[in-house]
Length: 275
Figure (cartoon, rainbow, N blue to C red):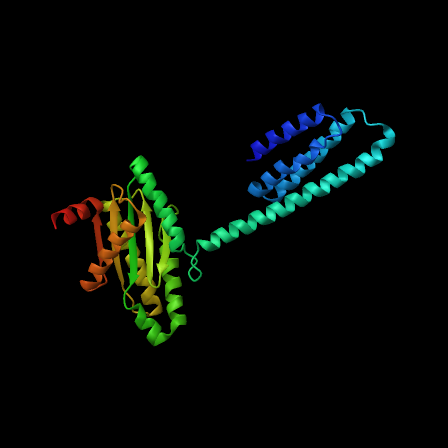
């Protein structure tokens, strides 16, 4: 964007040379100033504001401004500089506020992990990537067994501490390319790009061990039911993918909890077709 803004400034500079001085082309320098302030921040906005001011002065000197008019020129140019800096400050502030709102809208208020809305977007992009390039991925849901008991016996504050500890443990023991999200209540989702079934079990067993260690450290006595599907082809939609993994969690709970249920999407389709 900085390059595009610089090219735009060059175009405005040339037009300022070519057209009549009665037409204030220079005011349009605020457009590239606003663009770089939005994408690059305040420092870029200040730099382009100063550059635009220098360009305005050079055009007037090139046109042969009489010496007696230079005071008015400096005053007018200073006014342009104030306008450019004001545009830069306001745009950079709006851009920062926009990014904060976007982050907050995708962040779980309690744990700081990604929330359901953000995870839906990320999973949808991963599904599209899988359709286009064939990249595999594994989707997992982790549910805290007997979480209600913690809230009932130790209070909601302790339950919140447990959820924060779960999110923190997952984030510390996954790759930077992996996605950790809280879907709601005591359920967390994990997205592992480029990980298939033979690798996923090793990863999930490691995570369950780390989670159990964290629970024992605080004496919470909580175990975890984990359902996961390795997608070697697209499930078609985010909702369908999550529903399939939710079914595994339900089966896990019925089988006694504290276990990992892992399958591949191809196996799931085959089993559904056999019914």
